[in-house]
Length: 407
Image (cartoon, rainbow, N blue to C red; front, side, top):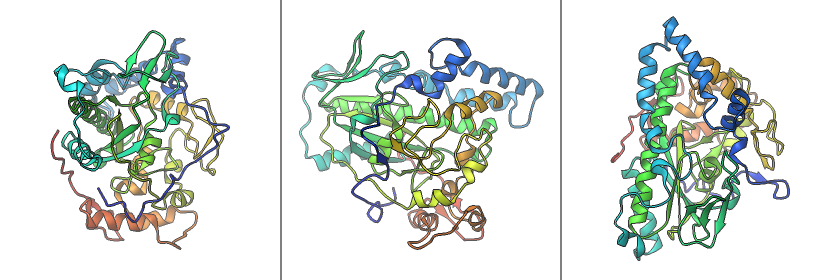
């Protein structure tokens, strides 16, 4: 990771209206609302039928970037994701909240170790299991979903172990830390969006993040602590990643990191392990996104706003009470259905995905470099720490291959 020292701030960059904010239910996610519109049932994956129908048409027409081979590679890349967590349903498949294969005696006696050493061990082990970035934060309950897609609530309870009952998902009150992990995707593949190859890179990211979260949770349980592995379930990923110092949120509503921009997938492990939290960062992203419109201009669904951040949501998929750029998520998902594959245009065109090149200056509505351009500074740091090479102003930097330690 790029050292965070120069970026660290006391408070996260977002603003919350505590009187207005309410915990968000999964059944208001676009995946659920669009599925319900299409099928009449409150399901999570009903939306995918229309996307698969479009995919069939693409394959029959043998369209470039949407051939049978392209889709075959995509389906293979998504296999581990579906095996591990079925797109992140809580307490299901390998995302079970109980230990999977650990001998029971190992789960009963927490290993005693200084928090500093324990935190270092967890981060190093996360990298061994596939994490490209990892941070720790106190678990803020406001970022835990209020209910799942079937309206079963998530509650904090006086229970030693996490469990699911007929009435609720019960998280122990002792679970007060979130380990947030980012897995980088292939930028060259993302660049082909909205073709299937870009969607394949996302599928690989989902599969890798599932492997990492499940492996890390089992490791933590083996040390005698509680661990809840999460993909897209249980908690919101982006605000926890911001709290853990991994990055800031951009105009497109995604996390942007100093190392990879928003070209990452996020997963979490919730735990009662006494870890030392990281601090949030400010790399000047909010100011940059105010003047850059690339993601909004290149969104085929017109789902990304060109307006200023707001506390008020613009559709039922938004949660009012947090000041941010509001995204029409259901419009985005409807384009996926028409396209026959995920669309990642917003990540592909974001200047932070590759780093600075001169033509990006022409996309800014104004240039404010009073404290230096955030993109310039980040690109310099990426080159210094080995994430890119040949970062010349007149051409796109070359992204160095990832050097993962393990899985």
